Amino acid sequence: MIRNAPDRPEERTPGRTGPGLAPGDVVEVAVTDVLQNGQGVGRTGGVVVFAWGPLPGERARVRITAVKPKYAVADVVELLERSPDRVDPVCPLFGTCGGCQLQHLAYPAQLAWKQSVVRSALARIGALGDVAVSAPIGMDVPLGYRNKAALVVRDDDGSVELGFYQARSHDVVAVERCPVVTPLLDEMIAGLWKAARDPEAAAAFADARHVVTRVATASPEAVVSITTERRSAAVARSAAALHRMLPHAVGISNSYEPSGENAVMGRKQQTVFGRPEIEEDLGGLRLGVSAPSFFQVNSAMVGRIFEHMRPLVQPGRRIVDLYCGAGTFSLFFAACGAEVVGVEENGGAVREARANAERNALSGKTSFVAGKVENVRQAGSPAAAAIERADVVFLDPPRKGSDEGTLAAIAAAEVPEVWYLSCNPSTLARDLALLVAAGYVLGAVQPFDMFPQTGHVEALALLRRAVPAAPKAG
Image (tube, rainbow, N blue to C red):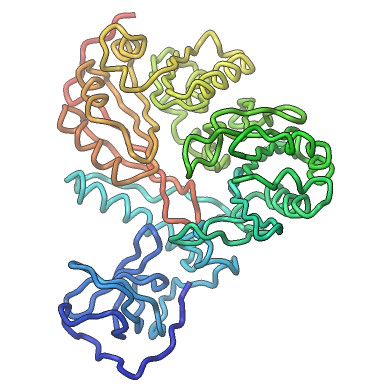
């Protein structure tokens, strides 16, 4: 991740003041922090400098590449002092591939840093500096955990390559092996490379934009979906050949008509071989999961979250699961004896949730509402009615977090407890501040390392109303 730039004769002395910095200057910085995107943070002459590669506690000579009004960006010329927490990355593509940001940081230090990220966001954004942030629950082995990969397809004059986007760009880095995916998924990636070069299977990749592969962790099953602009006859014709190259694939699909240039999946899906789902076993639940499913990429860590939450889910509690996706947490709560209403905008995810409820004999304890979570603000809507009766609201929103109106509706309904699971500490802090201002007391916050080797962290926050509401009517 540390790039070596050629020396220049006009190197500047360390400590030069900010207004004099210019691209090409070489200065010395002491690094005090690292950002979630992997940039080290240091200062020179009172100016903040961001450079990819250095870790907290390290000193480095860096060459300035850009100067902004309040900061500068640099590349590393030389590492002068190494942190005791620095380790050799396990992947030779680290620093080029954009998938990981922290492979050069020892795993215990990654966990400590992620705890500080959550704590800092709560204090800085939410003014919640007195909240206890527990040590993150991590992985026993922080590699080989991802159950899903979305590979970009690059056609270079007829030679197809598969990979991930380069760090900080849309250039594609060819990836034939990846240490953070499960062994089965790693095998599938190697098989896709072979298929792209096989005379009978290669046609499937000719007009492809992405190949999304998901694997089970409880069985040797995988599903593959190839995304094209329009429905592809070539994918359908190549299905049998693809399966010969990918024997673990129980299903192959063509995803087409993507909603935008950056969309990984299309709005439509055609299964051209086998079945569209693998069967996953998670915490005693049998779940049908497809390539486009709203399903967590780290099955083992979801199991750890289940273990952590199990004591909270008493039988008979009425729980509303907002942003429920394919119903993973809804079904867990129901299996623990709760009565659950899940709310989800994506119609396909709702259909999967209902099918999985039936698969686990939990249809009587769950119901799923297809619609925007924001509908909880509309009096008389199914979502609003569920909120009015709820003992608990569980939120697991996308990275942008929830919205002020939804949180206000939860508070107005005097829901006794709110459990908020977030993958973005910044939006979590913002939303928790709104709930605290609306009369909730924030308890301990528990981070989970859902994404080892990356700058991302999951966190669960538990809140109770400061003044208990009257018992909810049955």
